Image 1 (tube, rainbow, N blue to C red):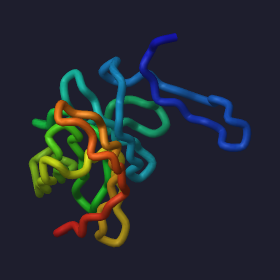
Image 2: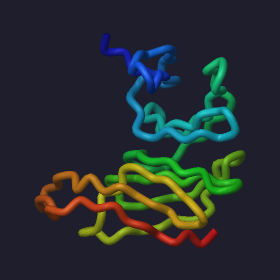
Image 3: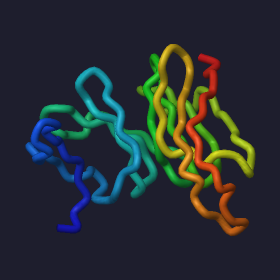
Length: 148
């Protein structure tokens, strides 16, 4: 139906059991659970949005200075967000939106899409998205040890 939404899927049947429209009406690339609520990326404006996991109402929102927001990973009082275009991964404080840390990836490095974190190790998935210079030819899954 060409409407951007987040869907809840029954894993046993594959059926959609619930859904909600994205708060900004656009597509999203990152989702992350936070104590029963859902963080998601938004593009209009570029922001991270926390949605109530039951009512789907917006609880909190802050804008980001990233170019193309993608993967999210919750880390204590912060949340990491990857920017696949500028090849950075930024940690924001969840309540204020202030930048806590920034990881710069090399220009010819991975194209970070998905993120997750476990035991202080940040994992990313690399889509090896084509750019003007071409593709590296080897998408990867990589790890970064987060500073905290």
